[in-house]
Length: 276
Image (cartoon, rainbow, N blue to C red; front, side, top):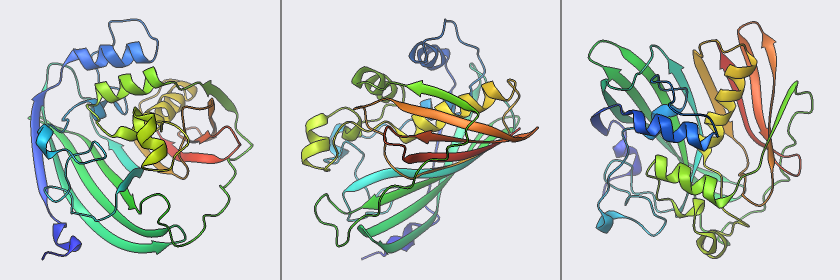
């Protein structure tokens, strides 16, 4: 049998024409007027190069079966742990682009909540003329609800020195529409009974990339609409659709800011840095 580490170096690529429909759909999701700009905004690349696993190849959580591109991790719960993005050149609707994904690392750890497996995937988005974006995507696999061997700590508190605050009220329709835009079948975002009974969560989970995109939008808007160059974020605690949450942040310099998501109990959900 192969070891999980043997998946390091595994690579897939997908090519497609960047279409305007998803940009218009995301503008609608953000309650903005159409038509949207033809330039893919920060985080908008997550609406393209989508997985198209056959229905017979879907696992019980709604994701594609592991063991093809991603290693066959024998842990049922999967979360978006964070990522690092670098924006090199604009990606526009109408262009033909290619996304190449490579498994960069696989590490097994034992945490206070039980066994963990971290997988980092590198993505590169290119057109015939240029490199547009590079990304490192961190995925964490965890034990089933009720199977953990330890107790979790109290959530870390979010910073209280933010200069910007924006309240977001999530609901099932928002989460479903984002899942539709990204062809995301993960049941934690739309199947409330599955969330509660299979994964032990109190409600639907707001997508990690959606939170990342909202933080990028906040950073860009508050930093004068400048062009985002780098964005790094880490997810600490999940956000559920059961209560409003807050996007917050502050400028650190003329070309750098820190942004974060504060949960309804004041917990730190996501923390990020943005460079312009």
